[in-house]
Image (cartoon, rainbow, N blue to C red; front, side, top):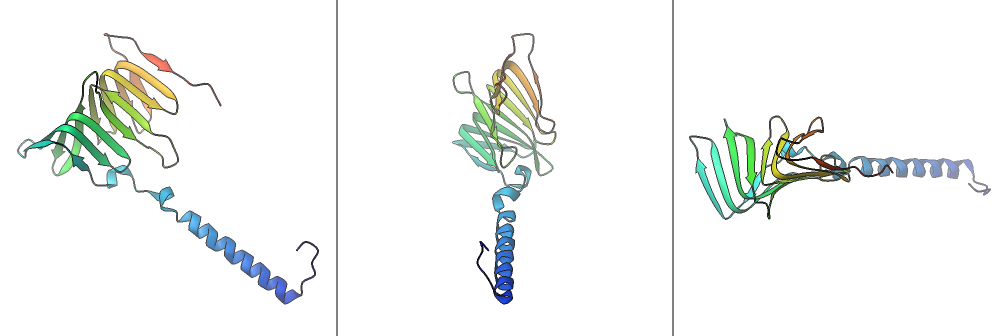
Length: 178
C-alpha cells in the first residue's frame, strides 16, 4: 500500500474489505435490469386509438384514429392498424398511414443498440416470422444506414433487407466507417 507499513492483521482485513467491495459491485452491475430486459414478444401489447372494431369470428380488430401500439421497445403508429389474432395469439399487424403522415414502426433490437425506424404508407408486421413489409414511400433506418424505396422487406431475425420493385428506384445511404 504505497510504502506504508501494515501489520499482517490489518493487511488481511484490507484485502478482505477490498475483495468484498469488488464482489458486491460486480453483482450490482451484473444484475442491472437494463442488461437483462425480457424480449419484446414476452411483453403485453398496449393499444391506444380513437375507435376500435372487433370481429371475433375473423380474429380481427381494427383500430382507427391516432393509433399507438407499444410492446416492449416496439412502437407502431398509424391512422389505422389491423391486428390479426389466431387462436388467442396476435400473428400480424398492418398499420396504414398516408404519404404526408406515414405509418411508423420503431424497435430497439439490442438494449445497448440504436433504434430501427421504419416508415411507409402501409407497414405489415408478421410477428411469427419477424418480418416487416413496408409499402409506398418506404424508409428503413438503423445505425446511420438509410434505405428508401416503394417496397422494402426486412427480416428482423437475420437483418436482411430486400428493397425495390418495378415502380421505382432504391436509394441507400451508407455512412463512412468509423
